Amino acid sequence: MKRGFTLIELLAIMTILGVILLIAVPSVTSLINNSKKESYKRQIEYIESSARDYMSKNSIYLPDENGSYCINISIIKSNGFLRNEDIIDPRSNTVIDGSVNVTYKNNKYVYTYYENACG
Image (cartoon, rainbow, N blue to C red):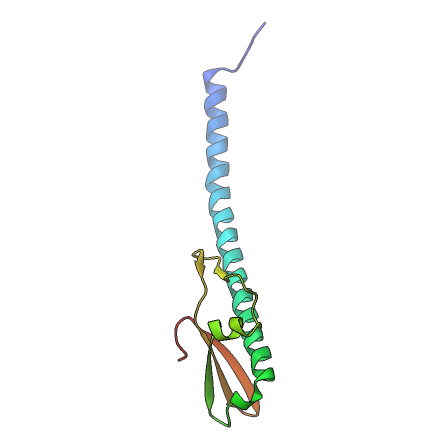
């Protein structure tokens, strides 16, 4: 009557598990990084959408042709167009701060997020 595994069987199992880890870890890491990038993109879209809402209520600030207007995120937030809690960058776990630049080109308003001041 035989009990347990032999040393060879244990080594074979360890080798198989090692190969599985070598394949799985980079895939999972890549999946996590892509998820963080997509989440960041959605956060920026939310900020730009909130700036669009702010500008629709404060249309006197809308720029003329080839003009621009810079809105700081804190202004958008203090006027109730962004939720009160901080918006966190999922890539670095830091607070997203910056501004949104509104430009008017080709009969269309364009909202662009900048991490610092408007560009």
